Length: 120
Ligand code: HEC
Image 1: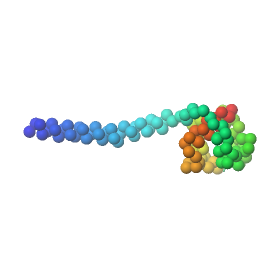
Image 2: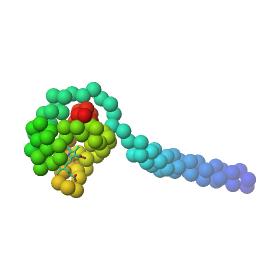
Image 3: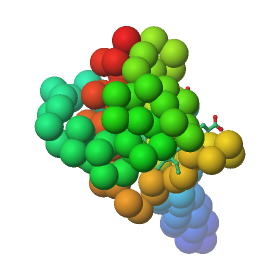
Image 4: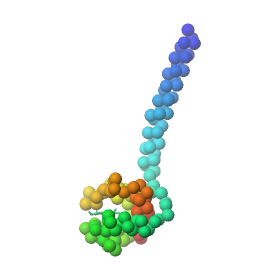
């Protein structure tokens, strides 16, 4: 009789543990990751970043980063954090900055961000 109750309780505890591990922990980790998001410091490949800039950004930000339809980026590294630059390029901005989500790989975006952040 008691064995049967113990077995049921253990079973319930086991299921609860599995449930918590599967559904709760990863979710919490994701939230933390989002809050503490930082753009990794990778060595800048300037040639790749510049090529991407020329075909995707120059039309609006100028061949000398002086700005045109979009604002100047010549000293963007002193104005904005890397995280702000990353987010702006990924998500766009309401004043006419297009989103590059799906048009740029994570690696390209990190490289482009670190390259822009060096413009001070
Ligand atoms: C269609 C024109 C257009 C293109 C293409 C474009 N931008 Fe922009 N960009 C803008 C405009 C307009 C703004 C200002 C938006 C605002 O403030 O709401 C802006 C804002 C920005 C900002 C924020 C500037 C600041 O002072 O906060 C960054 C960084 C930026 N663009 C980078 C880029 C990069 C990198 C590319 C290419 C991958 C790019 N833009 C392509 C028009 C463009």
